[in-house]
Image (cartoon, rainbow, N blue to C red; front, top):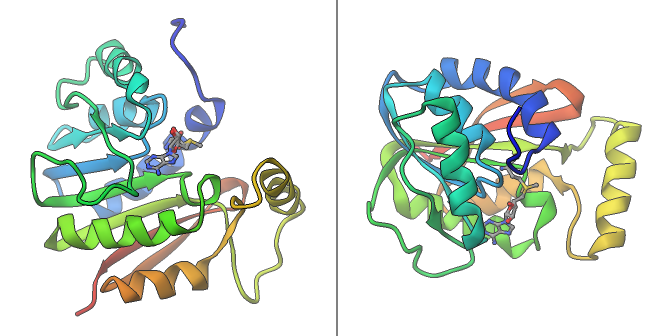
Length: 202
Ligand SMILES: C[S@@+](CC[C@H](N)C(=O)[O-])C[C@H]1O[C@@H](n2cnc3c(N)ncnc32)[C@H](O)[C@@H]1O
């Protein structure tokens, strides 16, 4: 075990997320990760998906060396240096204009609601025509009882910041549609999370 900043949740969910990424993504391409956090996902997924060039990014500039250290520890040679990217920035400060996939885990509920529109609009600007946006995290859904765990998580988020909280999947889909993206797939994940795949409207 190293002494790098560590997210237990990222360690727990990396296997089930990777299972879906293997099914959803083609063999190769360029991927932009939004809100990379510690960089554990970047290190793990890039190692397991060697055909992909993985571009991590984070709003917090001080995360870049940690993300690089996790990638080095994993021996992931396909992880680029992390970019400092706040999705609320316009335009996004990116060297490449188009990505085959954009991946974003556990951001929408731990950020103000306008971040959702910024993510969808940025993804629509920076995805290739057939590119996919993949979001992962806990959501509320119409007609689906919210688990007690997600109910208390939602309450604790809102107590920390009234602008935070679990998002209704249907609200996210409406924002996505305004940006020109539609939900293509919905995968139920462990611990009452969802992995959603978004693409351009046909
Ligand atoms: C709960 S962590 C998730 C980290 C990682 N994706 C994971 O699943 O382990 C949320 C991350 O979102 C980042 N974040 C918050 N607001 C953001 C914004 N406006 N743009 C980009 N990243 C943001 C935070 O810095 C934090 O690293």
